[in-house]
Image (cartoon, rainbow, N blue to C red; front, side, top):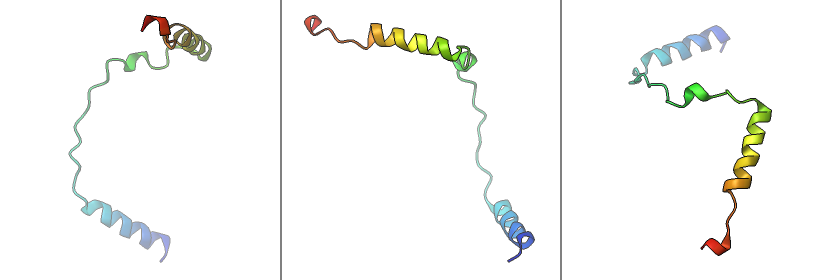
Length: 61
């Protein structure tokens, strides 16, 4: 099967598929903050989170 015929077959098949019910989605409220930190700032923030919040004090239980 030559590529033109194959492309025509695929195009015809795709045209016969039902239209998906695509609903426009609102932008996530946090999306505006994506990418605002540099890599070094992100590493520093991850270190601070690990040091402060990822520790379990057995005596507090």
